[in-house]
Length: 319
Ligand SMILES: [Zn+2]
Image 1 (tube, rainbow, N blue to C red):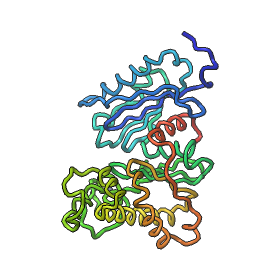
Image 2 (image 1 turned 45 degrees about the vertical axis):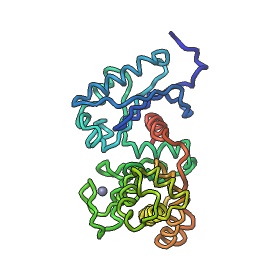
Image 3 (image 1 turned 120 degrees about the vertical axis):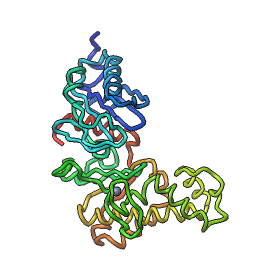
């Protein structure tokens, strides 16, 4: 069936957020409007066929829109070769590593297929339609289970010479901590400024705060945040530490890149009220003064959709 043209803009992108836990698919028009969206658990297993079949099924469900789709654009939590559209490394999606995703999907969907790292896509989404609208030098930092980063320089996504630019989460902020990161380094930012870090740092300090309400509950980052909002001293100390290390990481970024804006995204950004003061203090103390005074540090605006929107934008080229 042919849809009347005025129901959607000229062209649509079939945008995919292929996460370790959830698989989300959306149809995004050229203004960034999401016309359709689905979410399911990411198919597991040793073979990528489950993921491919789920994407083909989603496309078939939206058959009415098929004529308007110009590309499929997929973001994954891992390192990718964008030219070949191959996943190089993805701890949460091992079956996709080195799998010829592009060839398989192009054949079964019939559209050109693009692949991008999730943090890079999120940075593009925020520049297109979020907190970094109108900016050309943008760094986005995603504080989730780990810490991701995306860098946009002069309006272009900067992937690096080997496809691994923007890994701010694995820059060293405390070499003497003795804490080993899964990347092999010691003292990475994500060991101090992620949701995982909030839980670990709380557990480590429980004995110093015998009065804390967190003593008798199963710890999650959300519970630590709630406790902090109610003035719990342990939670406040944890978020202060979180802000300290985040601020150190951002000061390094500011001196290296001199961005117009740093966009902070991810679930742990909910603790903003509890960590921002210390974050700003560290930036003020450590980054070049005139730069630190001018760079904007802002919360993300696109929420969970930043990556989907960024993927859709990337498929339209010139980034
Ligand atoms: Zn690391």
